[in-house]
Amino acid sequence: MEAGFPPPQQSEDERFMRRALELAAGAAAAGEIPVGAVVVCGGEIVAEAGNRKEANQDPLGHAEILAIRAASEKLGRWRLSGCTLYVTLEPCTMCSGAIIHARLDRVVYGATDPKAGAVRSLYQILNDERLNHAPEVLSGVLEAETSTQLKLFFRELRQRIKT
Image 1 (cartoon, one colour):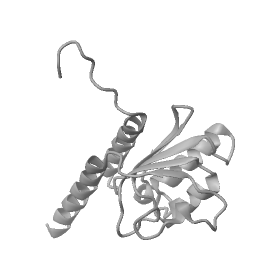
Image 2 (cartoon, helix red, strand yellow; image 1 turned 30 degrees about the vertical axis):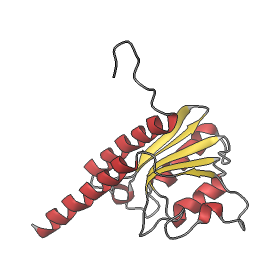
Image 3 (cartoon, helix red, strand yellow; image 1 turned 90 degrees about the vertical axis):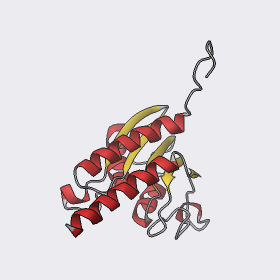
């Protein structure tokens, strides 16, 4: 970087994805699969969550579901039009359904999920023309970081299981 020139601005998408990565790290520290989600409306975070399936003993404890629920409560509405969901991992079928029903305008995710992804990997729920809503989707934001975080978690988990 040359002297006198400010550093390049990170994109809004990267900024909010970095917050989702922090939430995912917190989930991992609690023994959860490291997924973090942030709901942004009007350029501000209105809700955020990390996975809590184990802590809550709840199969619905995905970060996306928890963040969507919290955003609806905070905003006092179930329609989250005008909002963007940032999530570190490609949403599954359950979370994709919630995204459709919540009418989120946009979904931004980091790592793809070849085993359970329902946005582009296994299914393409969010752009299924038979459904009544189709949010804009941006994938691969901070993909290297989100993917590495997940790979390290599972590598460490396998090591703990072995020993």
